[in-house]
Length: 559
Figure (tube, rainbow, N blue to C red):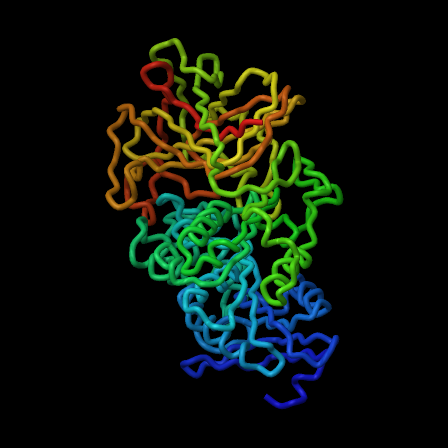
């Protein structure tokens, strides 16, 4: 590289970074104007757009604080050459980029990485190859692997898969993308052909549809068995309403328990705020001036400066500045309801008191099992009229987050169970799950569970939710249909949350059979899911009482 490129205040556009197979990837390089360098370098590798406005604003903030910034289009994206092979191509390309950046005259040989969603994965995956230049990661809203992102215990995370490929399709070279109606897209049957409405079916979408269980197609680029190859600390960032919330807890626990070196395990952090994938300090939409987000206000403490969040970490890792971050416990989480930040040492919290709330007569939730032996509530699930996704970790601009569920709860296919009005504050922080006993007239169907905080005025704010597909009740490796009208026990993972149910509020649990289009509809036929076009109604029955103690398991944190 010529000497003029190391002069301060330079913006170097479309710099070609060679990969091991002689493919060149395009990067824009932002150099500070506060001296001749060299500087520590911060790297973004993105499939979306290396000149995305929010990242340019971050780059300017990083430059002002003495960091060079490299923003690169990944293989086959934007101005980069080659063919994009989703996720797979990021391993060697990421490592080769680390090696190139670390050797440049304007870089002092110390690299940090940043970026959210897919650019989070472009940080973690190549970290397993351990470039000597890579010193710190900040993956925001990232994932351990895509089986936990595009499949949830076998159920297709449908709107996420479609939205992801639609979004990236718009920036694929020579794309023949069509304009389309999203509702028509998500309702198209069979679902294996749905993406053809948008563009030519992408092989990645085909794979998501076909691979129900966690097999080699998913594991090829998973971190599940590769944490011990990592020797760099990471600061993971997510939100209670992020569509990748669940994956970030996997990443944090994997990194802190299995990373190759003590320093990588000890220094790794996790930050969880009252944010979603799209509405957050890093998202495309900001929270309101007082932390307003959909149907709840979280206060000014929910408003973070995203550049400062990064710099406190980078200064410690790349400049050896004592910012105090290394002395703090590894987890920093926002407790909703009370709306304050708190540090914790482990996940789940060691002091958790696992507490069951049981379904009881008259649609009650009770801290003890019902005195009645066997009680049941029924509803009809019609896949032509599924329960619409509304709030929680649904990955959209306008439908995710702390939504008021009262309209949803008025539907005849949604069962609602609530505690009496609480006479005390009750905090739950941790993973939530439901155990339900149910039967169906179908040989395969779904059951969903939702946790809700009912405020004094009746507003029903969703916290977290989950789904189980009955054919996968014993795992996805060996699907098994159910017998009509036979009672089965189902466990529903509802992900994680942190919330104080205030005195005067009620705890509520919803049970239904669809959450669409967040998850693909179960058509109730038992046919092959990706090719099925039949729709069949199912009669669903939820049982509770002494014989069938359906309940929700809450991680109660003592005050």
